[in-house]
Image 1: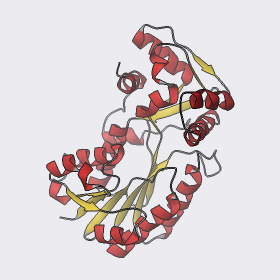
Image 2: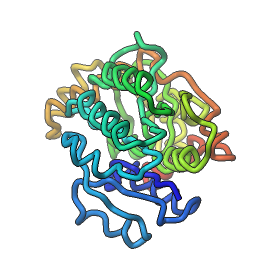
Image 3: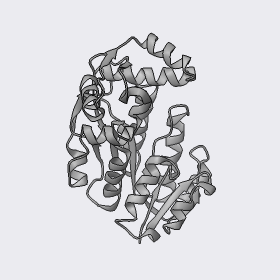
Image 4: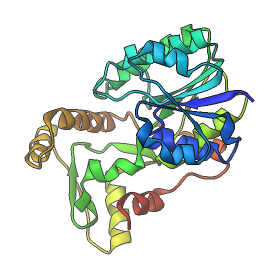
Length: 289
């Protein structure tokens, strides 16, 4: 049976994709790419083969991709040379004879939309590399992860008013687990070659709606107050956030304010075969309510 390889296997998204895949295909057909084998015990316990590979080490990728038919490429983090690392994966996949590569991009309205901490430009460049390669491709654009809401809004958002430099912007969300399940569906099916999909909850919510829903769930009177990016940065850095993190997160909020995450799609629902989580369940899960 052809092999399916998932990168970032020790991270939240890659690990979740593999856990969903073992429910759809034999574990013997799965490969987890990892830089640190000591963190892969849960995967090997499921019968998944682990291979070493690093996005910065082209030769390790060529070796790891031997005999692989499909790759799920979890995009590199914002603080790396994302385009060079993704190019290594694409080039190594071609050399190893991989047929199909799925790339996890970030939701944007169009190529001219607000840049999110350097991610937009590198996503556009990676997608161009992939489309010009000889590989079949599927590009899945992810929204903001619902799981990250406590980071964006603060852990105390369930107890009192919260602030953010998002203006009146709205966000379509989705959980990592549901996005991973959709990725597993794409990997276990045919017919998704050379397509681009926007995956999100199918709804976009304002921060006022989030505050109202938190109020209803907790019984606390919670409201949202827009603030400036400068005020947000000063406040978070006073809490010990490194400047590079505050810059990135404030950039995401600026993108929200400009409408980058307003667009919704029913594609996640189609892949899951059910409606994605609504706002109440999203908030309950994210804040452990």
